[in-house]
Length: 244
Image: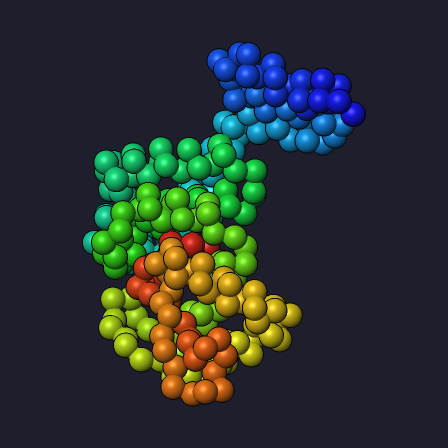
């Protein structure tokens, strides 16, 4: 087929002649050049203002439910409850809401949208907020970039079996190799390929959520390195806690 007859080439040529097209127009012109109705429908839904609003609304519905559950949990701690109730009046909350809205309209993943609502709600908890210097918006952006596998491994590294669930803010420079090996065993039992498991570990390191520690045993996998959660990793888990 000549390039002049290729519908995709025609679409791209038209876009080059008119660079002022909107994002929706660009996406649709490219999509209609490909014989896949599902692609066109998915792109149209992603860019429609109504659907974008609905995604933000879904996030805020989760936020409200989690926020009220957090308030109920803190009912007997007046100081904590007051701090939680005052959070929506703060500049940090306003900034976080904008970040959540921006990320929600870009996502079509229901679980990620729910996580955004939980992070926004749990960010109001002084017990969580005081545990790390990073602002809430940085965690909001991280949540949208982490895959389901990343989240699963994050939770595994914090499991009691791994002996890694030390208190937020605590210092820990060593990790028993047997403890990390227990995490590996759990991953294998759950049918996660060891190679994939390590891949997720390294991704978590890139986000500052996990740290790599040299091991002493020649039998330990992956060039004698094991992993533990950082304080930042523990904080993200706290922000993802589901209460409602």
